[in-house]
Amino acid sequence: RQVADTFDSPAEALMAFEKVHAAEMRPGPAPLTDTERAALEARSVFDVTTAKSEPSRPEPEIVPVYLADAGDHDSLLDTFLDAHGEFEKWRAWADDTTHA
Image (tube, rainbow, N blue to C red; front, side):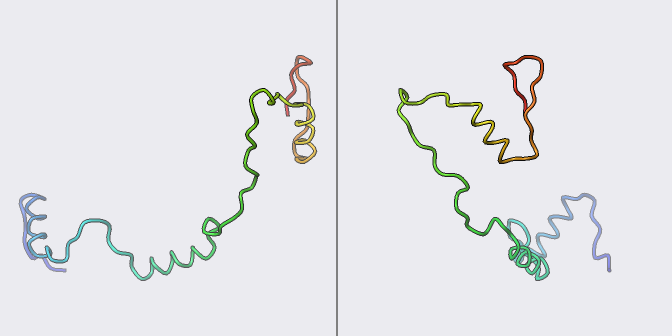
C-alpha cells in the first residue's frame, strides 16, 4: 500500500477519486464476482420458489347472496380436527365457546 496523497476533507478525497476513476465509475451496485455468481447459481438449483406449482386450493366459487349461508360450523371444525391430529377440541367456560 502507498499513500498517494492526503486530503483535508472527505469531499476532497472523493473529488480526487472521481477524477482518477471517472471512466470506470457507474451508478448502482458493483457487479457480482465469479464467486458470488457461482453461489447464486448453486442456491437456485435448490430454490423451491423457482418451481411452478399448481394452486393448493381451488378458486372460490361465487354464489349469489341469497344462496349463501353460514354453513355447518360444527361439521367444518370436526373435519378440520380429523385432518389435523395435532389439534383437539375442548370446551372452556361456556357451552357456546369451543377452542381448538
